[in-house]
Image 1 (spheres, rainbow, N blue to C red):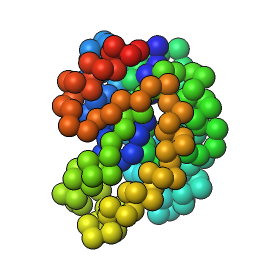
Image 2 (tube, helix red, strand yellow; image 1 turned 180 degrees about the horizontal axis):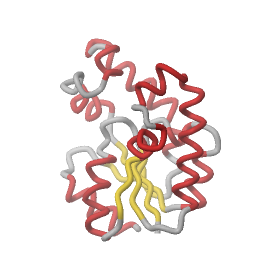
Image 3 (cartoon, one colour; image 1 turned 45 degrees about the vertical axis):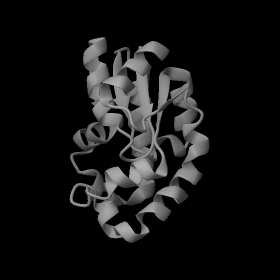
Length: 169
């Protein structure tokens, strides 16, 4: 069994994924970390030295590699992963997917104090952050909504979200 968690930045994919994997007694895989290990570069270095097109290409290749494996695991995707190439088709056919859906306000509240961990947020600045989130969510929602299940994360703790996923799977 492969469970894929997708959604926007700061929706809780990695935090939920780690707990869910423990509950299911399977491995947890963060796609960005997996890519960094395979490419021997950070995501930021890949973007800087090889560009976004290269990153999106290898992201799809590594996602397919994972989803074609025989192992069971929980995988958290980068926020943009479902939106490129045939990634969402592959996710639909090879896994049980969950969209961790958060409101613009929830995402904003989580991101506004994370500028040191998230260079993208630092570059945008908090004054433009809500508009940036709203635009991105509008563009990405058609992909996210294709997940097998949608779990609203607003005002829920990690245990509540994990329990809901366990009930839906």
